[in-house]
Length: 111
Length: 111
Image 1 (tube, rainbow over the protein chains, first blue to last red):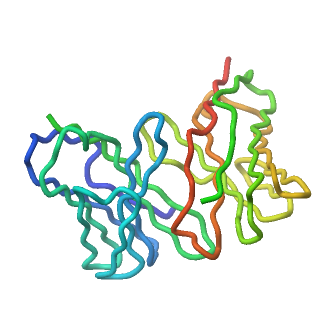
Image 2: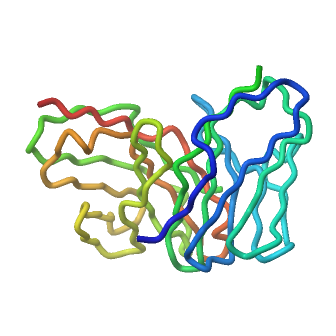
């Protein structure tokens, strides 16, 4: 079974902390994505990457950055966590013509 | 992004078929119709997708209207494990990085 693995299921961080969310896929997919999911707002794209060291802003990139040093790994960084970044974060990957594969999600709480 | 419209919730009895509708009147020729489902505290999971013809797989069937402005996901025998939120989304082969992931249909399965 192909997999997208997110390093943490639950995280609690303090306001102002730097937070790293890690995502690894084993499908050799070129395209990887970070979304956040909030009640009533659906999934919103934060950043995506179509190749190593390449990144593009999604719809809500403010307060976030990303890193893709290796094809299989895509990291989301919250430079200075704030309470409005409390959310479910989902990583996904896809190759052209295929379907999206999502990770199990990381529920982040910023206190 | 082309949008889809789904009922907020539906209910089914266990072992009975379920038909989940989706309207996508602004669909374009390059849009594939994808269905995903999300179990509580999990990331979305791929169910099925199609372009013009009806599709079957081990999880479900997808019936696509002739004008492609609507589709129906069919679960042939609902089980309690099928209780989830079902999302119908359009993914373009021309721009598969962008899609609209709305609120979906929450399916409740009664024993």
